[in-house]
Image (cartoon, one colour):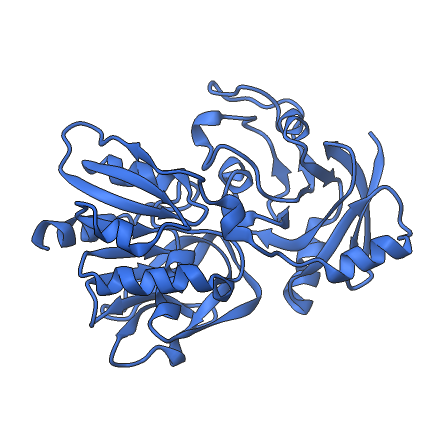
Length: 359
């Protein structure tokens, strides 16, 4: 295998071997602590523009299982693992991970000390990195590394046209889902509860959705800086003013808060993995959640007359959810639909269903 290097913006250099496609990749280096679910990670649109580091040392042991994908493509820029399993074993396996990355043009590196790399990112914060064939960067590469930024992420990952996903079994509700880079399991959780889901591109005017005969509105996860999405934030404000039940997840949660006058902030290294503890403020109960975000709502900036923080992250105290008092709406920063993490917050989908029943 060819020798390749990961070079961080800080100047740190890691030597490894190539996996996946050949070439060069520049992106924002982030890490996920998930011990399982690497397929969900790779196909999660929220990783758009990023080079993802898996902290769990052995990746690829179950191969490639299309049924577990969270979208129809791969949006991350690069992929880093300690050890890549070349001989996967699973009765659903449809191929090897390395071959899958190569087919989709994803440049990766294996064989580096991912523990040391993760400690650098934790201590110094998220930074840009480049996967390249030489430990010495050219002037052009240095410029690209320094200037790289994730931009236009939502527009790049959202669907391009409206589509309808039928309910499993009897149709009980009609849900409008605004796709900001949605994970497929959000749709599965809704259709499995009798919802016909109409998926809208992020560019859809609020008036079009409010003019339809929908029982509720789902605002999905997605990548990038939430404050960048000025048009989408204004549409969310109109949707929340429309009176229908609204449920936001991850980026949807952030856009809802921004639309109500709160602010967001970039975290030092983000929350990514299946082991993030979130405490419900009303009950004091702690849930272990699956998360993937680099920005958070600043709970202190949420106007008191609009709502209150419903969940907080136990590790750093950041906002993990909001219950709105002036709108028929609530949101969470974590992923209650996540296959890779525990399933004990799926009750939030039932809460959304109950809101539609009594609207």
